[in-house]
Image 1 (cartoon, rainbow, N blue to C red):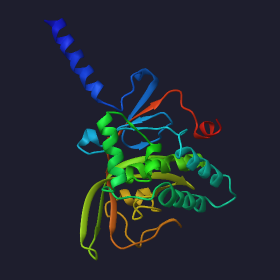
Image 2: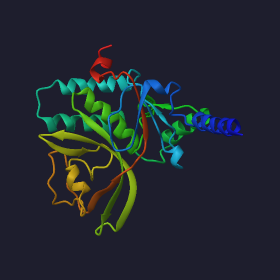
Image 3: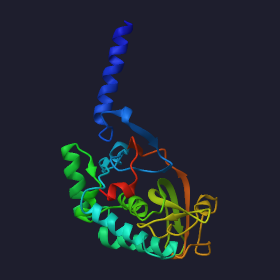
Image 4: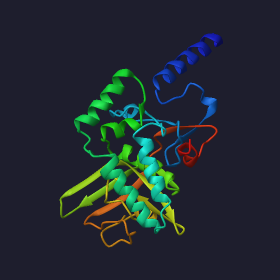
Length: 256
């Protein structure tokens, strides 16, 4: 009886793993992280939203593919300029939001077509493909920006959190999942966000505190203060990220 139970357990496990498209075959060569502040590497596999009931297939990071590679080289060139920290960040934000991406609507036909194509094929979407379609939402924007900042020599983390935003003036109160990036400058952690400007350029600690931020909150030069309250409720314990071992630096990848 024991061997039958063991066999059934192994069979169920294999079936579950075979359906987890972001799961590499050789797990011993990957380090797995689940949510929080994440550092993601080239060649990583990342859980999309489809396993949570959404429509986004899992991701595969391919920094050497076009047009992602050209974008990263441009970010690297920005990093080499003799400019203040926040000016470099602003230039990379602009490059990400207005050059690499042109469409940010969840219902954009180019975006939907890409997701449908990879869901139908049952394969992971290379991150570079979002650059081909020039379409994405907060997850894709934050992933691309994560590598754009790293290419410029600006260390940062990718984050996915439950957030709250509200405005009495515009009559909305929204709780939703949102992806963004976190950089450290002069010992303080700041949110950098190419998708939702309500978070961009504000201190992480302020966003995590009870009342959150408003237009009066302390902000970095890249911020555009606006009416309403915004805050991070908590960091999600997803997506799962499978980073390959050994880790290669972004600079080394771009030098190949």
